[in-house]
Image (cartoon, rainbow, N blue to C red; front, side, top):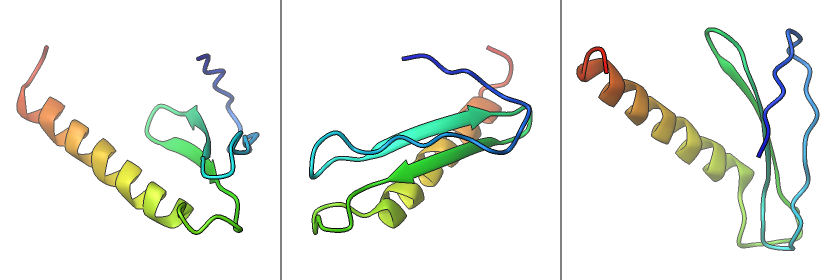
Length: 72
């Protein structure tokens, strides 16, 4: 997987490739990351809102873990 950061806050999103999947792209900046999440509205199994919440929670936990360990 390749990441091509841009100085702009605009980004290009990706759609899911299967009916019950997600599309996810990101654009890292020095102090934040812009994410674009997508899923088909017709699929009852997926929720971009829930996916986004879990992604945010996971990133927050990783940040806390890295900050608590000091310099690696």
